[in-house]
Amino acid sequence: METAKLFRCGRSQAVRLPKDVRFPGRKVRIRRHGSAVILEPVASDWSWLDAIVDKLDDDFIELMKEEPQQQDRPGLDDLFR
Image (cartoon, rainbow, N blue to C red; front, side):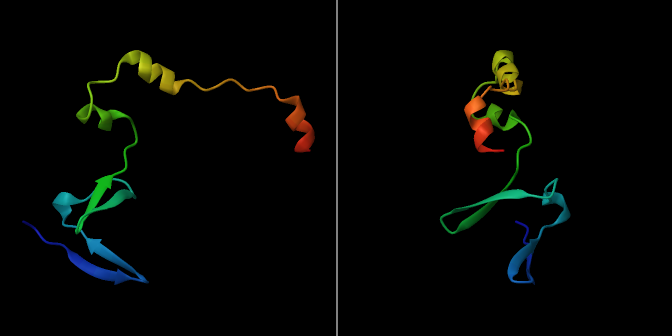
């Protein structure tokens, strides 16, 4: 098992990860499980669901890409002028 160095960065504690376990991107999700602290990459798509359930069908993926239509709300226009 590898170890990592802890250091202070301002008022925060940081971890210097070895090269072979570094994350892509600039953010990770963090959670605590008992005394363990778990770092996970932040997903940029829905592929992380494949490990939990079967592959998403194409209909679901297309529905998630749809943008809702603009709603006509004339009463609200008067409030926000």
